[in-house]
Length: 296
Length: 220
Ligand code: SF4
Ligand code: SF4
Ligand code: SF4
Image (tube, rainbow over all chains, first blue to last red; front, side):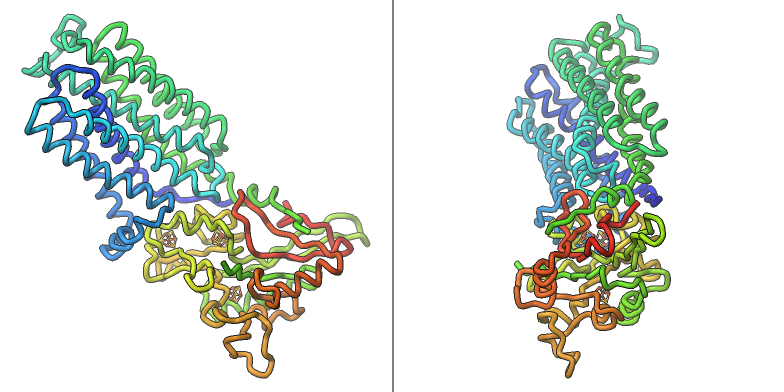
């Protein structure tokens, strides 16, 4: 039975890309929930850009030589699943850079940019999975559950990281949190204003959808040797833990829940993108076995 | 849109591997790699009612060609003139995405069964080209007086098939050798089969008579 060798540069590329895109998506969302967010949004976009730059570095490592980068650039308009992924990534970087400049210059609400940020976040998350889904040779990749899981698992860590930044650098917490400030009566609790609460509600919804998608993906695709790792690291740590954290955060605003949720979501997002490679050994023979067709 | 392909008569194929050798020789295929292989579909039944056949496997020239969609650089592409799925080795980064995308290939391209193969020395992926360097403008009806006649050239695997099992041509051109063989098979009531996988719509056709064996694709 054939098996692929895990390509770590691809895992890192997709992980960093969705990390950056997810944060940017929540910056976009913040334009619609009110509250003063200039400082925190500036920091969030810088972090998103650092992650996107790390993703670009991983892509360069994967491609190996400058000529190949030019080939990828030339191929970007081909409309193939992988070119859509690159297109979404480039769009995300452009939106992030523009967003950063505008945010640094003015404090007013930037709804158009907010919408653009949410669109590119969804696009990067989805196309990262869709380029796997399009690989029909891999039984474990060729399922819409893969694209949906990739999308949702991109947005959840972004949400938690954004909320952490709000807690640490938000308008109600200009001085930043002090050490040991993770109790409900600390300055962190003050940050749970109305706008943050709305974002937490969105995060609860996304975490719920993400958990369902990750479980569905685990049930739908043949995970092979990745089964145990998937259920522990992806569904449990990456799905249930962030969901519980988001729900707890809504009930009792502790910084600890944000850290727990962010940690779980990040581990889950990385593990999803890594374990998918281990799940390949179901592949070739099975595909061919059921495919004998008589046409006349 | 031309649909150039091989048509292989499994009633005739004896599993001799002449096509494998001819292909390797023509295309300098790397040691350990095979752009075409002959897969034995193991016998079922009891003697003397044995049911077995051989399936020569090479790039199936899929109409949906997922390998092209997976390639980040455009190295996997369709010839703009005659629509054949090809690889431009100059543009190939060796990322192996196409190996993952092709349902007939090993994901590392280094073990059978696989139609795409990874050339370790050059760091690129390779596969059957339908010998487009010889056959790009050919109708597949071989000119035996001049086998290099570009209007009628055939791939070496076709020319050297010891049992005359292989034909080549555009399935959308009724005058191509491949179309004529298919038309005759249908007239004779023999089965025309494909090895479909995940909706890729392979263009390669296999002919098999029920008297010889029951079509089971590549078997178990
Ligand atoms: S058989 Fe594989 S390599 Fe050939 S066209 Fe189909 S997907 Fe591409
Ligand atoms: S290995 Fe080469 S042909 Fe295959 S997808 Fe990568 S760049 Fe394209
Ligand atoms: S058509 Fe050419 S490349 Fe393809 S199997 Fe035959 S000899 Fe090999």
